[in-house]
Structure formats: structure tokens, C-alpha cells
Amino acid sequence: MARLVVISNRVADPRKVAAGGLAVALGESLQQTGGLWFGWSGTIVEDGPTGEGELHRHQAGKVTLATLDLCREDHDAYYLGYSNKVLWPVFHNRLDLANFDAGFIGGYRRVNQLFARKLMPLLQEDDILWVHDYHLIPLAAELRAMGCKQKIGFFLHIPLPPQIILAAIPQHEWLMRSLFAYDVVGFQAQQDVQHFERYVSNEAHGEALGNDQFRAWGQTVRASAFPIGIDVDEFLALTHAKEARDMHETVRREYSQRRLLLGIDRLDYSKGIPQRARAFRELLARYPENHRSATLIQIASPTREDVDAYGDIRRELESLCGAINGDYGELDWMPVRYIHRTVARKRVPGLCRAAAVGLVTPLRDGMNLVAKEYIAAQDPADPGVLVLSRFAGAAEQLKEALLVNPYDTHGTAETIQQALHMPLEERRARHQKLLSRIREHDVHWWRRTFLDALREAPGVG
Ligand code: ADQ
Image (cartoon, rainbow, N blue to C red; front, side):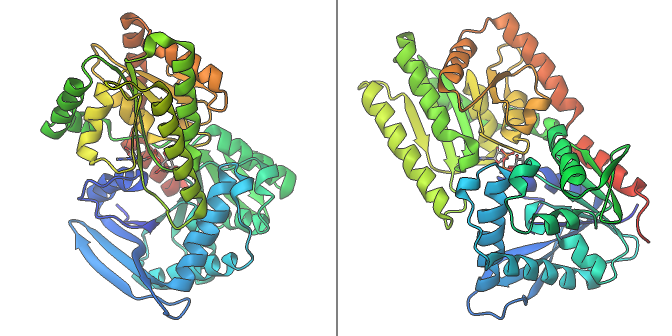
């Protein structure tokens, strides 16, 4: 079978149990097939020349990790700038947080060109390449310009916004045109494919040819939804392992008289954490029966702290949690436990299992794997209830969750109350269906269907 080459902004040792969507999802996949994983090393070279970077290679089991240093100027424009101040906010419908500084695009192009230049000599003739996420949209176009004939697939982990929002990016046409240098473009949800189709027909004056084939700018690409999943068996094994059981025990003991609600996220404005806290406050205001009982544990891991909007969300959340505890707390009960930290991955299932309600309420999310992890961690005999935002890609699949509009504080509070009072029979029935859905479309299914589609693509060679 052809060697798999994965390219993503960050590279993680697939043998380590790391926190973070992509590392979790791809690690095991690469380890199984063997191959090359290429990306930024995480090292920033102060005062280094732009468009240059030293390449490092490590062997991690069957996988070669090839990583590249970036100089400060390139890193700041490519990563902090264009990726995280333009593409991330706009793709999550947050034009208000976007900064269209004209200086960012140069760094973004330069780093994509650098990636292409350093990757080319490492490629073998029958490799297949799988590029990940918004940092690297133009990578295939750069590789093709250098003569790369191998099949190249792209997977966007975040949502594709509607045409009218995408068009706010000054370089939107260049970005979308870059996607046509790939053989297969994968999105998380059907809705993203619809946005792609609208853009192609209205903005690029192209057309949908049927069978997920799209034509524009004289090129054809396949674009389909490949919703990412988790490794359900691995997560179940983690759930039953000692660390998770100990965590479960500790939490159960500490909160023995309480009903727990749990949120686990990166502290990102897309995750709707302040909105969730407000819905929880509304629950306490409307239903005093929950006083001294309902307790929200919110674990939010630090992320992208060099970007201003992340400092703002942190301050907002801290003051909100403080206010809720001040208004409703008692000497023997704090309604919100807010923890600004990453929990060890081995403990996450224990926390999930102890929570009567899982709150996954992003304002916008490509998929959201926490929703799937919460389901996998439940005790089938007495499962908790998942409250899920309709704006997460996961909502297209997880229809038996209680879906909410996270902007609607009142509606979300009502749904949380419903979740807290759901009869056991209904909880079991919903959980059983949800579990079979995440089993059917797990991470192995995702990898297989994407790579099958890429292998079957006609290719340019
Ligand atoms: P992320 O936005 O990072 O990923 P998500 O899908 O929620 O989001 O994955 C986060 C992972 O990190 C989960 O495995 C979760 O358990 C873990 N995690 C999050 N916060 C944690 C914490 N405080 N402590 C410990 N572990 C924590 C992007 C997209 C998503 C998409 C994924 C995968 O934004 O929409 O689902 O990629 O494609």
C-alpha cells in the first residue's frame, strides 16, 4: 500500500497520549499504516531569515516525524496572524474578531511555500499526501507548482462559512481556488459542502457536476463530508483503566450530594463557554431546586494566549464565574468550578462518566470530539445526557442529544433542566442510539473513507 504522508501545522509523537483534536485523531492512524508526518517543529528562531527553516527528523515507531523551525517574522504572520486572526475567526463566523492586516498574507504564503520546498525532496513517487487544516490551504497549489504529481487530499477541521462571510477575506478567491489543486477536499459536515457548492456556483461561476465533483477555474475537485470520529474502543479502554476509574471515584465522593454538569474545552471564543455559564446562571435563577445541587465543572485549557481575543475571553469567563459563585454560592456549595488547565487525557473519561449532563455548546465548531467522548464514557446502565449545540458539526450526526441554540440563554437553561430530569429509560434509549452512531462513524471509518476517496480520485499524473 502507498505510503501515507500527513502534513499539518503541528506534529505530535503518535505514541504519546496527547490532548488536542488532531493529535488524538491522527496519531493512531499513522502508527498503523506507517509513514511520514511533516509540520512545524514548534520552535521559533528569533531574528532568523524569512522563508527559511531548519528541518529535523525523528523516528517514532513506524512513523518518521519531519519538523521545520520557523523564524519569528514568519511564525507571527503565518500562525498568529493569517491563520488565527483571519481564517479562524472568519471560518467561525466571527468577522468582529478578524484582523485583516495586509502584512499577514505574505507570511502565510511564504510558510506554505517553505513547507512545499522542504517536503518535495522527502516524497516518494507513489506516496499519497494528506494535508490538514486551515493553516495549509495553499500547500497543494505550491507543491503542484514545483511539479508534485502525487495525489493530495485536504481535510478542513473547522467549518467552511457561508459565501457572504467568506467573501470578507480579501484573498477569498485565491484561497478557494487553491482548494482546486487538491484531488479530494474533505469537510466535517454536509453543511460545509453546501457552503462550498454555493461559493463555487455564485462566486466562482463554476458548477456542481454531481457525485461530489465540482468544477471551477478550469479544474475539477471532489468535495465531500467526512465527519471525523473518535477511537471508541480506545476511549472505552481508557474509561475502564485505573486513572479514569480513580478520577471517577474521587469526583463522585467529593460531589456525592450534587448533580454534575461538565464542560471540557480549549478556552476558545468559538466554544461558547461564557454563554454556557450564563445559561447555567439562568437555570439557578429559574429553578431554585437546583441550589446546593447542580454544579458546573468547567475545564478550559489555555490556548493561543498570544492572540488578544483569547485574553479577553479568559477575563470575561473569570468574572462571570466569580459573579455566579458570589450570587448563588453557599459556604458548603460553589455552583461553578472553573479550572483553567488541561486535564490529563487518561482522566477525561472519568470526569465525563461522573457528569449527569455533558455541556457541549459551541457557537460554531467543525465537529467537536468532546461530544463523542462524553457519549463513549457513559455507563450504559445509567448514562448522562448530552446537551449539544446545533452549531457543532456533530449535531448533524448526534440527533438523539438534546440540541440547543447556545445564543438562547433561556432555551439552553430550559434544556439543561430537562436533561437533569430525564427519566432513566429515555436516557438509556438515547445513549444506546448515540453510542451506535459514534461506533459506526469512528476515527477508523473517517480515515478509511477519506483515504479510499483519495486513492480512487483520477489524479493529475
Ligand atoms: P478543537 O477545536 O481542538 O479541534 P475538539 O474537537 O473539541 O476541538 O477536540 C478537543 C480534544 O481535546 C478532545 O479530545 C478533548 O478531550 C481534548 N480537550 C479539550 N479541552 C481539554 C482540556 N481542558 N483538558 C483535556 N483535554 C481537553 C478542531 C475543530 C473541531 C474538530 C477537531 C477534530 O475545532 O471542531 O472536532 O479539530 O477535527
